Image (cartoon, rainbow, N blue to C red; front, side, top):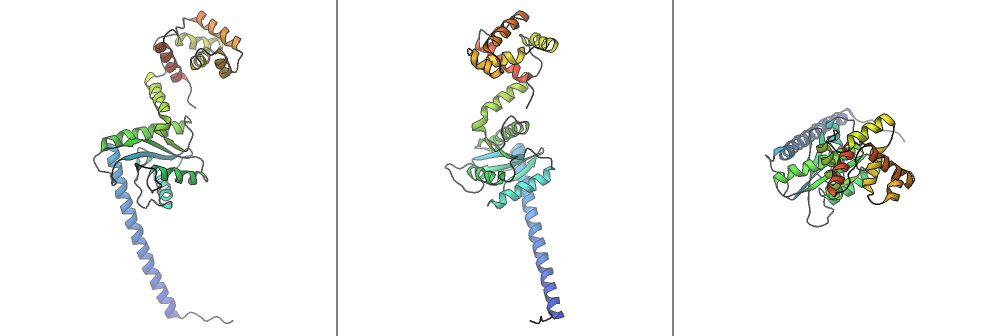
Length: 278
């Protein structure tokens, strides 16, 4: 079958039409970019000091979005999460970057719903996205009912994200309600610091370093399984008699007073601060 050549006039008209369409698409892209930057600036201001209202009614929830393999610059990570959220129906995502972290402000529905821009929706989106990239995570602070609460929710989201990045929490969807204990312990660990304030730990640590003993991990296991020699021994992968022998030898090095809940708590917090991060 013979092919009919396209006339020069038609080629010219098609080229003109393509130019018009290209300009239209560029205009739409520019307008979308401006709208996204305005939204990001507004959300950033709301999360920094509450100087701007969030373009959505309360209550809200601030979520840190990231990847454990996050080596890309913040702009590329923001583009990634913008593409992911839009792909699953959030046409005006409340996203911004702040101090190197990508944050989203989600609506906190009063009932379970799959509406875009809510926590149940994000959980579904992340499940789908993690099928392709297991390092992705969303760390959600507690609900916020006022602009001041947004700052608190952002802080909680950042703390959860740091725990995910350090390996203290598994990636995925992490809510403050499910990991509040990890946040409390991490705050205490930072407050205590690595210089023990009195007590038996300085002497025990020095003995471990000089003689190669394992008194610090032994004491930690004993406190974690207080009154349960078998459980503590299993945690250390030693025989219960070995555990008892270590406890006796520890008291020969220095007095280890575990007589009150307060002393046991203080010692465990000091030990947590000395333990290497994952």
